[in-house]
Amino acid sequence: MLDALRKEICRLHLELPHNNLVSWTSGNISGRDPNSGLVVIKASGVRYEQLTPDHMVVVDLDGKVIIGDYKPSSDTAAHLYIYRQRAKIGGIVHTHSPFATAFAAVGKPIPVVLTAICDEFGGEIPCGGYARIGGDEIGREVVRVMGSSPAVLLKNHGVFTMGKDAESALKAAVMVEDVARTVFYALQLGQPDEIPPEEVARAHRRYLEEYGQ
Image 1 (cartoon, one colour):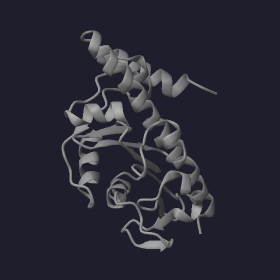
Image 2 (cartoon, rainbow, N blue to C red; image 1 turned 180 degrees about the horizontal axis):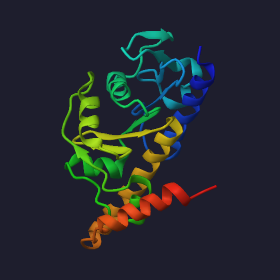
Image 3 (cartoon, helix red, strand yellow; image 1 turned 30 degrees about the vertical axis):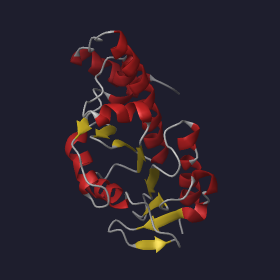
């Protein structure tokens, strides 16, 4: 069941260490099958170089394991809460990528001071409050603050990104860290000006409607 999605989610997990978004066994990716509504997520505490499709656990939206011999990620309840609340989300990524998590550590959003932030995120990357790990509290906080943003920082914790599928969510996670690094360096030089809201909206609309093939 869902062999293709399990293989895909396994493959995408290997992009996390490749892009320096995780260390050791931290972080996870999930994907929702649009037909069955079932969710595939990484097994808890398995190192990335050891991951195989068999380490991808299939759960229903209530957290019941449908397929898999491993315990699913400790963040599963958070992922499932987001899926239950946002029907259009098909993929979720969680990381502790260093520059973005530095903003999360001090409870600050990433301001919209780069055109790349306009394009990908359509505004600042919001930062939610502290939420306990293990239950659905993190998912509740993500949904509370995300608005239309595909990315949320969580105070004292890390980053959650969402997309129409797991690869879209992964792209957002890579871009969060990229812009966080640039904004961090910019703040060492001075106070960058934020881009006006009307220009943010124009740039984001152009990116969605005209960029790419």
